[in-house]
Image 1 (tube, helix red, strand yellow):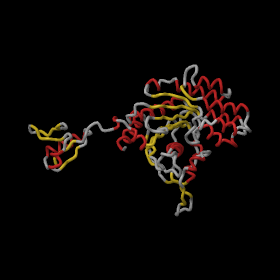
Image 2: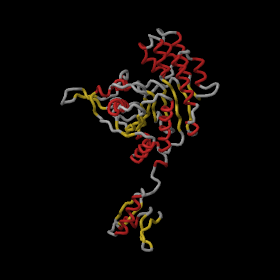
Image 3: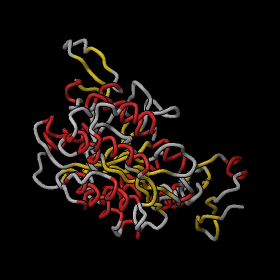
Image 4: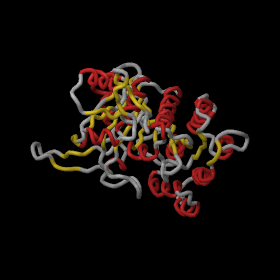
Length: 370
């Protein structure tokens, strides 16, 4: 797991992402995001015995990244941050979820164009490549569609949470029962969203059907244009192992997301391994509103799913435990070149069947495994 963590943070650094390490415990107002009730509900809280103020254990690192961008850095251009640290959940995200996940991720601030969304998705796919996961399934959606429906119908807000739950479950009966006070256009759109999942492109693809079945609201049209541009990008040409779908009813993720969202699924795990998306304007709560997008992955889950390429390619080399200057030099040379060298007592060294350092023709050399 540690080897994978280092590999991924080095990968993010190669794209220009600077690592930061936020504190686990902060005053609750420093962790709060307006309108994100789910984040508040998942947060542990306690009273600070020194100040009497309420403290919170972070449930998500993204708000802390937004605050770093808004306050500590204050860059006018694009800002890229990455991190790997534990978060604590008062309630687990799912039946199989850990209450102290190790959250690894990247956040990109200051650019509203699709290039930022594509870079974040590329990094997410590159993370799975680095973990040796060959087959992946990326699902796209856009919360702006739901936000447009809510803005066009004053009655939507009163039943929003039950409607979202019914939509996520693709429960038409529940949606119909909850839509009594909604406009006919809103009800029809929600019913349509339930069936708008599957392959993204083509005459019968989700995006083509969505243009026919959803209201012709400006925000919805812009959302479908964005999703089409992502689906038609060269990103998925570069990652042919990635199966791309769109599910416009899949809005799982933090409430603070407000644009393009994506989830990546892998064989052997029942839930999304990676989640990410747009959360423009989060920094306004910290005094500076900026376009923003990012993703995160649970490192333990990724390590459990990791394939052979995530493992060290070279087996440890055994060396005899003796005071010899040439032997010490040979050991140092191997370690400088990334090999693991383990010194052993004579009995263990003789019994070792893997590669070992042996003296041959006056030189210490690595003998292959037997």
